[in-house]
Image 1 (cartoon, rainbow, N blue to C red):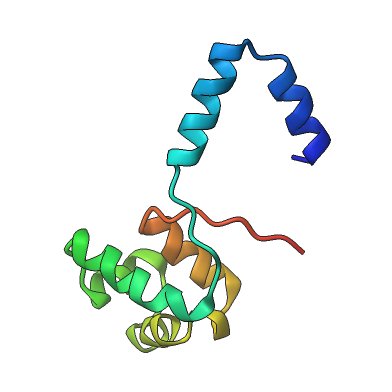
Image 2 (cartoon, one colour):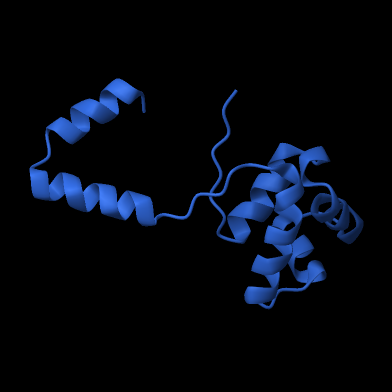
Length: 97
């Protein structure tokens, strides 16, 4: 979405709908992308879901050693593997070129 399309969208809403939309939007947790912050986030999500490294490696179709490398250095891993892992954990990401 571009800023102008957001403005157009908001202008079409009633005052009540606009206020509700903005409240809900501000309630969404957004994490700034810092590659160093992905490792603790991945570990936290895996603990919450009670998933072992072996189980997750099988789920995303990589070897255990590859999985450990992904967790240790997410920014250095293949995008397709990292995306599969984050998707399995329920972490939404947007990639832009």
